[in-house]
Amino acid sequence: IKTFFYTIIMLTISYVNFWSNNANNIWFTKFIEHNISPVKCVENYENPDILFCSCFGNKNVINLKAKCKIFFYGENLNNFPNYNNEKYLYSTYDLILGFNYTNLNKKILRFPLWLAFYNFYDIKTDNNILNFIETQYKNNVLKKKKIFASIVARHDRGGQRIKIIKELEKYGNVASPALFYNNTNKIGTSKIDKINYISNSCYNICPENSKGEGYFTEKIFQAFESGTIPIYWAIGHPEPNIINKNKYCFCDLGSNESISKNIRDVVENCEKYIEGDLFAPDASKEIQLFYLTLKKSIESYVI
Image (cartoon, rainbow, N blue to C red; front, top):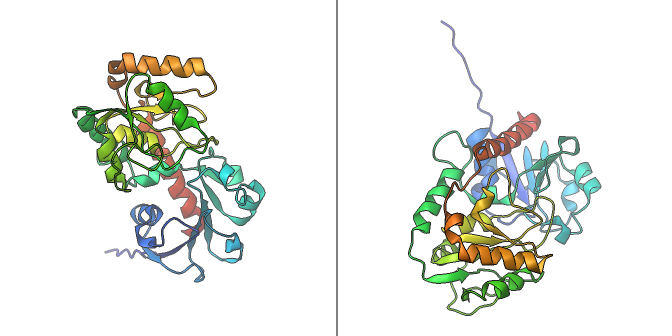
């Protein structure tokens, strides 16, 4: 009789300059627990197996030690000049995760922030990120719409939001319950507050706040969750291998004629934006590639 013994590896993990101080609840902690091994969260000076860093603080992480140093930027690095330095990132970190497209020779893995907004860590079962968003979409798109259009934003530093608002207001009122353009009762600051509010609107203005390579955030996905038609702007069409481009109105802010034409079309022909599949045929393969590449890349340093 052969007896096999399996050693369970416990990986230590730490975070520095991150959004949250609660390491146990951060998406990457749960992803590693789900896909690689059990995890113990430790202080960043304890030489963890994996050290996650972001752009919200100084660059002293160069003095911290870990088997695998990972830089994750959920922001547009054009707005964080101290970290927008490819030479520094390459020389300091083992993996660079963010919006830029994958280039393993430069240690760059595309892993956009919106993936970490959803508590899913693989796509092997029906309980996955795409099915969740699509189910929410189908439920909320049937909801009786009390509001013509909505926007939930804190600011408009680039001026793109007000430009879209002024064009859309030619056809109906745009309700804003947040800091920017506030014209109605304010709502809470949680994701649920936002989803519940904008699900009452036919259209949701949800452009990005700036341009950057591959910079597509959670904004359009939350608009879909809410069962609205997104009015969107970014460096280009968002996640073209994942999102069906017929499900949103893209605004080219460089052309007033294009903005006017596209918004008129989405208002006059809203049914065609509601019909059809939300996601592209190979969307699940694209998501799986994100997960699998991240898993294998981390494993190559710590397993």
